[in-house]
Length: 452
Image (cartoon, rainbow, N blue to C red; front, side, top):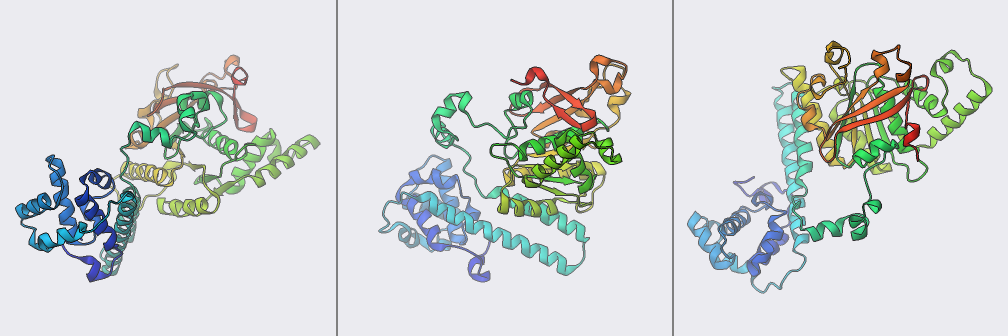
């Protein structure tokens, strides 16, 4: 695409008038360049001569020279490109009679959008070509296609550098909320007060890893958070739960019993009294109305999740995604080791979270290291993440569940106590959150002293 004019050769999407206006506006007033350069690169222009003109403008800006017809023509001549852009006469035509343009960002956005469409088409053509040749493993083709399309989502907006005034103007709630922490709009509340206090909630685009040894309550805590988000009285948020380990029926049983505070064992055996039945019915009705979406498909991969989440978001919105659990996901393509495959999955999930602007709560296994350490030192560490690879690197937060009573069953004072260790947090402190764990309901609750 960088060496030939594909717009006319292939009929790819473009807007030549918008490109000419952007370049002409810069020639007319070079202060516009910084606005355009924040969004566009030379390859975003469809015509080769436009790409060369913009590249010359970038070079002039880097050396601190003014950008106008003469300096651009001189730079093009130095590069040996002046004739290929139709000479000085074409530069003159770009800004000749052009009024000052005040909405230059809009024209730059048009150019960027057309460039993104061309990249999508070209990426698709490459995939089609590889499929037609039939020389490669289909899973490998699909894996690379999936990764390339996810990366295209990050090319949509380049304007991430902002002045303080712009940040304050765009702050939700205005300057009053920015200056008064008590009025700030924080992340998505989990309903666990100490956890929300330490994290200020779950934020858009974050990848949160929740890990623990078996039987510590990973799934229970994830479902508890999902229920609290989707079933809160004020502004409930849609939640998508992908369970690769348990069936829909098993998850629903857990959620109904947890909400109703009915012992799961009694529910399974059918030993229910009238109060139990009444509470279960109320919980089931409440859950039926909640914006909860559960998927128990086995062998789920990133492309499946991406497609399903885009549909949910378009139809209902999306507040939180829960995946149980990472090591059961399958990666597309061939990998030298399971560690590489899991690392690829964690990177893909982080890209998905950013693309959908939604927090992802992803469960993960731990290796056996906590069990082998000396007594009194069983608290999980970041190095205990199973097949870790880049999990720790990709995650914005890493949480570990630790229940002391599991290792000291004779201690009555530890019964029902749980700790959530925040081992990593990019934008906040690490530390420990104490909770109550109601085993019979598989439910985590705030401690009484945390409830105000």
